[in-house]
Image (cartoon, rainbow, N blue to C red; front, side):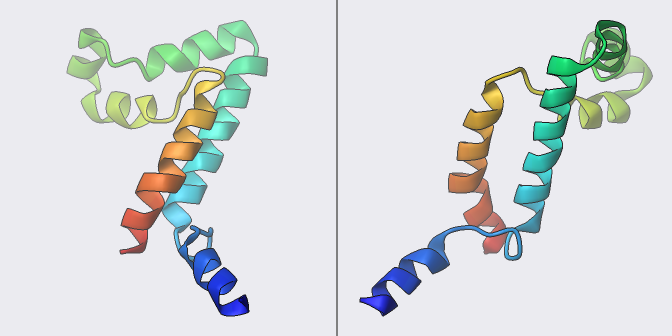
Length: 94
């Protein structure tokens, strides 16, 4: 019985075996909290810098693409956490 439980637990992702997945989820959680509780002017400025609109992509394409990957809206963080845990973590482990 213990061997069966242990084999199931080994399949679950962990920060030690899949660090990118978990660190990225922590960053997404922190930026989501910042969007929710931050000063509106500061949040607007940060979102404008990371916008993927045509002007921003033309002027600063790499910055816009990288920064846009850091922002999620409110409750969507939980959906991303589930997707990353189920899909991305096993891929990272391989």
